[in-house]
Length: 300
Image (cartoon, rainbow, N blue to C red; front, side, top):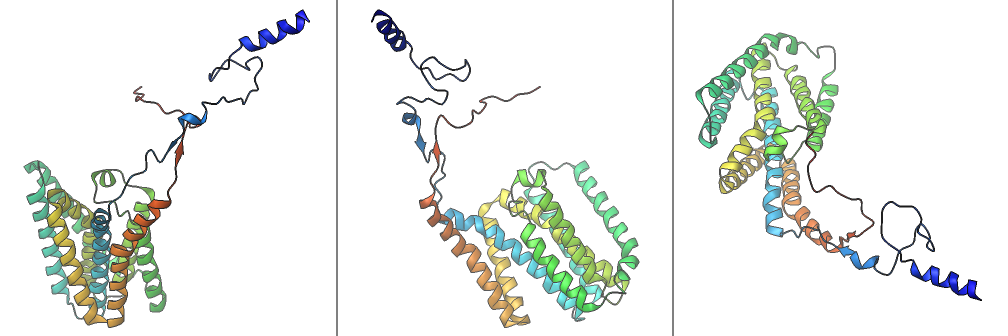
């Protein structure tokens, strides 16, 4: 009788403690939890409440790049149809290059003369190397049928749009390029070379490849400069670009106009509305079962 009372008293003296290390506690299982376990549960603590208008404005950057790619494809089509001559393409290249430098000069906060000279020298080396390689690009796909070239080009353009980093209007995305973004850029360059290999002269090849690379390489950076300088200017520029693109696509083919207009409406209106609606069903729980996170940075 005395031994039984001694055992029961020794059992009641032990209190369960929530410790990470220390082995099994006497009288409790290894996976034991007390009544306070679920008291620390938090629901939807870090869920971001999104505003419909802000999401729509952020989606404008996606539509802007879609229109940029559509304009590049339009220039390809007009060049293949001999509507744009070599001189017209070269004037377009010069205008785009000058406009890009002008935007950078007007929107840059700190731009020294040495940095500007470095940009000019790199651009000159780039254009010179492209002009030297133009004869190779001109005969690159001579043994391949045109139907294969067009099908491959269309597939690569779609793949480029699918893999493109549409957050490239932020400083972090421009500084740290992702693997998918690199693939997207390489795909756009290959598609430009495939189109250029079907042009009649080497000067045509040089002009169209230079135009394509200017757009695919520098359009995200120029868009970032405009957006950083003034969001309202970025918005007006994007809307004007959409209007110009829809105008030229309408004169090219009405079915393509309807398709592009439907895509822009879907991206700018339907997708933001869906995102706001599905936020109501988002359910995230946090509690003591979550992994511990360091509250300081390890700098060693």
